[in-house]
Image (cartoon, rainbow, N blue to C red):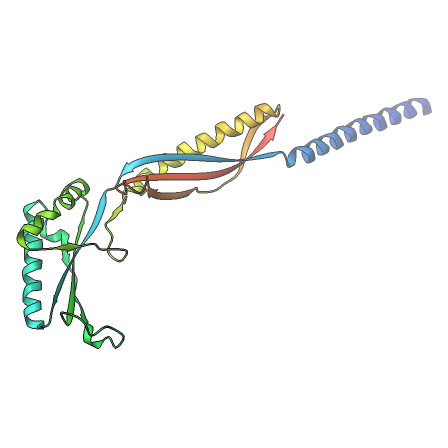
Length: 235
């Protein structure tokens, strides 16, 4: 009987050692695989036409008599608005800013050698989603010279601005494309490392940007999204 108990005890101990070994091996494998990850970036880009344009039309009146200047200013603004509406711009797309009046005599550092006292700047702004139409009118603004209206450069303060406001509609599609590109990159890495792609450990919502395609075509936008995804790897 003692021999039987001894054999049984030895068998149980051996079995326990085997189970313990398997548990230890599994723990070691899990620990070794826990940090087996790959971080990849997915990129998606599209070129789109701007769908909103803001066009500030700047004109100036110079002189010494304020009432006369305001009369001239009103005539100039009326000619500009007529020009715009005759080419298809709606009245609701036109706004007139308050004029900016500079009294040159009030500038103590200015030169006294001048031919006029007042400089009045007027800005009429066209805001429209008809980008191609507005661009065609911008190309024809020299026609205003025939009516005695000189349009001046808006400079940094009043540039023509093109935007892409329908961006939200394309976000899901671009994110899907960026994630698919990230997965392709991760799969190549896993294959090269003799592994297989496992689960997504973490992912960001993607960084979106909208920029001009180049300096000469600001009405064409480049929409770009970059997403970062971390995958776990398995054998």
